[in-house]
Figure (cartoon, rainbow over the protein chains, first blue to last red):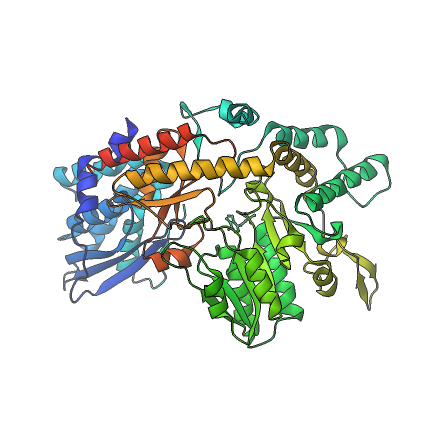
Length: 154
Length: 405
Ligand SMILES: Cc1ncc(COP(=O)(O)O)c(C=O)c1O
């Protein structure tokens, strides 16, 4: 029952064929994240244009289906958003993964919300929440130009 | 030997874990506890508690005797020459840190080489790394072969004129390889090299005879040996424990304390500073009695049968890839499934009540060598049955189904 919610088709598909699994050419923001407990790691690259709009987003790394799918979906939908919008989306996503029943951000289309909600299955697996959130924390770190590696042990 | 009967001695198997019968395949991480051990802790705290070695009142003397009884039981169980060669620690990790720290203080010098292996758990690498930082010693790694073994020949090849110490695992917690510790020790001693053994995985599953192995130090983790957490044992040859400096300072380890000088206590107190894990030590006596009642030969036979069965089962399961294929193998089955990350495997198996471990199992060097970020590991204990391994295989199949393999 729960497993079906966790491993929805869309997650398995993104996990197997992650979008944007590459390094953006001419990126101007990036950050690394790692999950020391399980060894997952991710490197997020962003290319912002003059108006601070994300022209391209990509990632490199390895991890479980949940973390790969999450990074894949995230880098897809963040393109075309500005920094402010992107951060609001991150907040919204993290809030949903933690406790909120749904996504509220008006910067997300209905279709994008549906995709992200596919990750809500991790709520029932506290040990797996960090798999879903690592790339998101790492993206914020990239925006903020933090040089320290993001670590999500909890 | 009746495994069903033995299993009944472990209360946890009466529990439903998320509505499932528990298929516990994580004993290399920590074993479950027989009722006698749990009861002993309760009994000690409710009826007999006192701190040991400090007071002369009745309870204190009785507790001290119980505490020392366990030391004697351990001595006999591992066939150490002297009871003072048994030091209680908070775990195998502390035991290994004790050895590295004290040898670092008084024996190893700048430029000396320590030989470890690619199979080592972080707790048999990081303490030596500290000495690499503080004393400029060099660490060399004996490399695994195709089967995930460390051979005597490989050790011999990696010994240099500067090698002063070899620190090796008895049984790999990832590939299951059992190392030829006795032969390695003979070779090392013929060259004046000290041998430290990380016996975490050896002690619960193999026959232990310190005088026959002849190693200088042997670290044991009691919680993997059907005993309580917070407890480990360092076996050390008396001449070393007498010669080396103390590790931690505090109460219990001293002889005389003056403003201008301090002298240290005799063995074993010298290495047991502060209030020790008293209840755990006393309860660990029951773990040894439990193992003795089954007989280590029977334990070894049962676990060897399980490993052989499990290995065959997983080998036949296509898309499962076993890690290592050592000739001499303990109860560890580490594997990967092409197309499924180990964390996903562990989550899916857990849904069926099958408890395994996923990750690098504190062996990052080994996983780097194998070029995989993580693996899944099923490990057995005395309470496991072939049915448990059948369930493991079935849950792996379910995992493959979910991932459309
Ligand atoms: C091979 C090995 N060495 C060392 C340790 C650490 O033992 P402890 O938990 O007693 O500190 C473990 C257990 O995790 C182990 O498997």
